Amino acid sequence: MQVDLRESWRIGPVEIPSRLVLAPMAGVSVQAFRRQGRRFGAGLVCSEMVSCAGLSYKNEKTLGYLRIAADEHPLAVQIFGSEPGVMAEAARMVEDAGADIVDINFGCPVRKVTKTGAGANCLDDPDRACAIVDAVANAISLPVSVKMRRGLQNGSRTCLDVGPKLVEAGAATLTLHPRSAKQMYTGEADHSLTAELVELVDVPVIASGDIVSRAKAQTVLATTGAEAVMVGRAAQGNPWALSQIMGAEGEPSREEVVAELILFMRETVRELGEQRATGFLKKFYGWYLGRGRFPRPFKQELVQLPTIDEVEQRLLAAAPGARFVLERLEDELPQGDEVLLDLPISIYGGG
Ligand SMILES: Cc1cc2nc3c(=O)[nH]c(=O)nc-3n(C[C@H](O)[C@H](O)[C@H](O)COP(=O)(O)O)c2cc1C
Image (cartoon, rainbow, N blue to C red; front, side, top):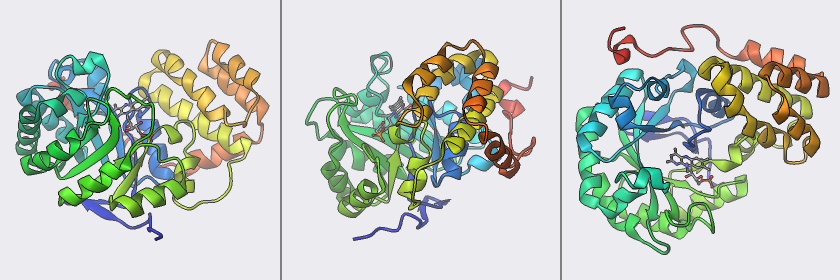
């Protein structure tokens, strides 16, 4: 059965224009990544997980995660934490910042997060998980979504027990990454659980895990009944994976790859500042230039260069035609203050 990925669907009142969702990824899902994801066909994009405690302390770096551009919508901002009251306060800040959906992280398997009772740990404490969803849903007028793993231990089916309870507590959508927390990213996502979850709840389910091609996306949508598929690692340094899943054919030219990478670099510098962007971007060089697009020594050379400016010059020397692709891309992008919104002043506490 062919499923039309171009169909729109809804999370509460929010219309999602395609059945492809860009995954939240810590250390990856900056604004430039999300804007790019929307351009390449994602109907919904998501911030990386944001600490509710960091928001509550008005930590400047954490507040920076709430910067939303006008051309990202619809956009979910994901929060994590273990205290219902603090999560509710964080959700209000997310709503003020202009997000369309508040997503709650019940999937993070990293010990730094789970040891605080947050992330995937909440799956083992359904009462707390439901109290968080209930507090968040009652604090804001935006729809609330929840992203979770199958459970903590390998073979766990906890998501099937907790999922319906979360919906009862107010979740308007569930995203399931059907690996256990213990598995981290090993093995395979077992989407037979996604199909079971779809049967149990009357809200849309998003299937996350190992969606790497159009064929896989079609199969998972058709066999699970999920409303949408979420793509994570396959889109790292490779937004063309998104357009291919949506039906585009062919691979990008070297010029297109370099132009997208430079645009990404420029936007990231604007967002994070030169110093933070320099380290942040290094992993992206390998991601963009890998897949046989450029020889390995070239990637290694870029990582060694001390400034982003030098990386840009080196890239343009390797693919001079990229300059023209880049000009066209920058012309097509909406520009200006009305697009690149900054944080609402209220979030900084008025000054
Ligand atoms: C580097 C990295 C960071 C991630 N960070 C988050 C996160 O902040 N929040 C979250 O819910 N999931 C996070 N995930 C999980 C992804 O959203 C997704 O569920 C998972 O990678 C499986 O999908 P994939 O096979 O398409 O990558 C992260 C995954 C990776 C690889």
